[in-house]
Image 1 (cartoon, rainbow, N blue to C red):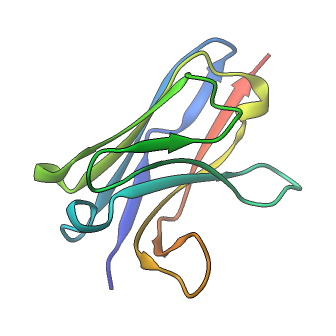
Image 2: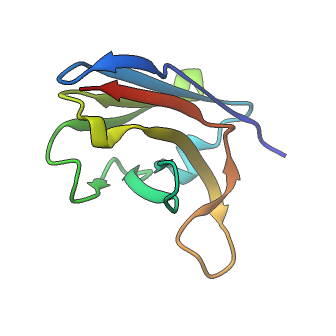
Length: 120
């Protein structure tokens, strides 16, 4: 069982920045890459961004160039740098990694989440 621990969330004003971190208990990112999801109150969890093992990245339509996903394999860490934050970015953000979960697009290991709140 691999543990993922997120940190870096907090309260920021509109236009502010945060850097989320996800530290794994094993060298999982070098094998599977990393993804970030978020869940806002009353809404379903949604995918935010992914970084593959080879370095290719993808992100959701609402990112619009504001977020950068990265990995530091030496530290077993994944990051989500979020700039120009908007109130609609308010959510709990989750790190996701490992083998694919069944027939879904997400993976089997999840962190506990870190709260991001953007005030207007």
